[in-house]
Image 1: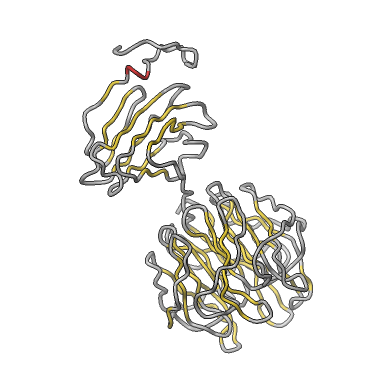
Image 2: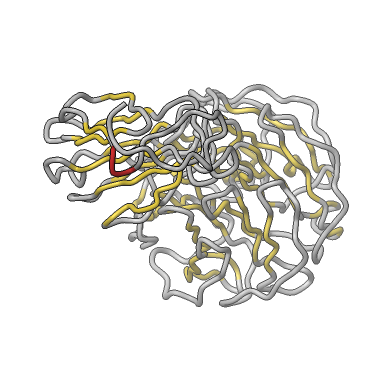
Length: 423
């Protein structure tokens, strides 16, 4: 063994380890993949390509690995850390961990099974874990015709194919919202039945296999037409705004285990029929809606679930639209009341772009969700007074595709969310 012998007080296996000063430095790595070992240092040269670095599959407290940007090119071709079954800074290896700043160096130390590998120093840029994207989606509930709400569901495969109706679970209702939580699960909550006269606060959890659970007793103020979105880097979600007989700014946060928190005060203009969607890393935005008249204001959501003040609107003021994420850190709002056929893209900074016209059949009160890792989908809705079951996919560049012939019961005001990180 080369290097200095250090105190083995943290070694669980009884093996005497090398000191940090005795790390064994390896030849410069230029490959696109490399598996690294504890007690070694690596110069990673990404001049010609990005590099995925696989950490050891087993480790014990005090194990150390150092990675250095050899040619100051991580800003052009980043490194991706694969923690190989172990946690990385408290998150499972399903999370994406990239380092993408030129001149960066990374000193990793393993602590225990809970925290796993931790950057004791990551000079230049701090870690920002990105949750893995959901692959599948679910569309459920909605309004079939006067006095007839449904709890039917339609699963969406990772290729965007919508399945036929499946028997629903939970109170049949409409005017609810849905969001992904816990990385790979979903939640439908709030809404109303009896043509909007019977508001509720019940929720239904969706497993990572697309199974909808029975009603969970109401938490928070019963209301209809809230918006919802995931946020944060640990699988949280948020429901905000809506009508409880009058428009409000109420917020209910959802933990990464699907627990709905009690009401908290929101911010911005009280309204209903608002849409929420993720953007950037751990952030979300709520936009548009009905204050008594349609609006195009927006409110950003921080990575801790705080609701920001009103931002002056961009695009056509409207309600009854849908929103989904697509690509990497980007999102799109589309359609809306009355039978509009337009979209507005959202960049990674949360800036909403001006209208793009002509994106399929104009309609309102649609469902929208992400699927397939970086794709989106708008489905169902009302056009010309007739319920629809058509859908429009969104590619990874944010382009809305032409109408796809419908599947399932034509309906209006369903909700949708992504689930499952497995295709």
